[in-house]
Length: 240
Length: 246
Image (tube, rainbow over all chains, first blue to last red; front, top):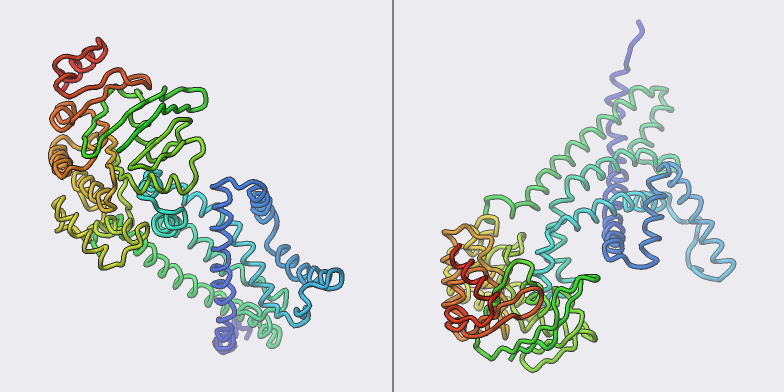
C-alpha cells in the first residue's frame, strides 16, 4: 500500500530540526537589534533632513525595497569578502581580518540587518513623526537636550505606535531566514533539507519545518501583543 | 527683569511681529490681550525660542540675547529661565504626573532623584494633585492636566512663567480650578506673562495689560486704565465686544 506520509520519519525529524532553532532565532533577533539601530539612525537623518546622508538613505531604502532579498544575501555573501580582500591588497587595511574564517552566519546576520533596517527606517520615521508636536515643544521648553528629548519622551511614544508594524516585519524576517541555507547556514530549514535528501522524504521534513515556523511565529505574536500592551499602558486607564 | 527689544518675526514674507518692545519687572504679572492672529502667542513663543524670532533682543534676568546670533547655549539659558504652560497642556503622555514634574529636575537640572522627588511632591501639593501622582495624563481631566502643566513649569523655578492661553481648551466648568491655581502662583510673587482670552481674569490678576493687534502693541496700561478708559478706539471696540461675549 502506498503511504501518503511516512509519519515516523516526520516525527523523528523534529528533534534535529528544532536543534537548529537557535540559528534561526539568532539571525532573526540579531538582525532585529542591528536593524533597529540602522532604522533609528536613518529615520533621524530623514527627519532632520541631514544633507548628503539623507540622499544616501533614500537610495539605500529604495534599493533594498526594489531588489529581492535573495539577491541581497548573495551580494553580501560574495561582495563583502571581495571588498575586504581588495582593501587588504590595495590599501593594507583590515589586515587582521581573515576573509576565509568569517562564518556564513555573520553574512546572513549582516544581510538581514541591512534588509530589515531599510524597512524599519520608514516605519520608525513615520512613528516619530506621528508623535504630537506639543511633546517636542514641551520637552524643548523645559530645556531638554535633543538626545534627552528623544530617548525619554519621543522614542517611548513612537515605539508604542510602531510596535504592530515592527512586529509584522519581524515575523516576516523570521520566515525569510529560511533562505540562509543558500549560503551554507544550517538553520531549521537547512536542517530539514539535509534530512529530506538523506531520507528522500521531502514532504515529511517540510511539513515538520513548517510546523516549527508556525509555532515560533505564534509565540512571537503573543509576545508582541504583550509588549504592545506594555508600551501603550499610559494611553489606557491603568496606573502602574 | 525681562526685556523684549524690537522683536520682529517673519514667516516667509508674512510679517507677524512688527517690532515689539516690552519690559517686565520682577514679580509683575502682565497679560497680553488681542484678537486671534494678532501675534500674541507667537510673541510668547519667541521668548523661549519655540519660534525663532527674526530679529531683536530678548533679555531675561540679565542674560541678553541678540536673536540673530543666538547660540545653542543662549537658547538653553532662555529656556531654563522660563517655564511654559501650553494651551493643549502638552504633558508628557508616557510619564506619570510625578514623572512629568520630576523630569526637568533630573534631566535638565541634574538633581538627585530623591531630591527631585521631594521638590516635585511639594509643588504637586501646591496645585492640589498629591493624590494623582502615579496617574498618566490620559487619566486626568483637562483641568487636572493643566495644573500638572503648571507644576511642571514651576518645578524648574524659572524667572518667569509664560502662559499660552492656559484655559482655552478647557471645558467651562474646569476653567475656574486652573485660574485659581494661576492666581495662587501669582500671589507668590512670580513674574508672569499671560496670553489669554479670559478678560475678567486678566483684569483681576494683572498688574499691566498689553493690547496687541496685527503684530504691534496698540495700547498698554493698568487694567483699570484699559478697561475703564482706553485711549485707542480699537482697544475700546475689542474690550466692549469681548466683555459682552463673556
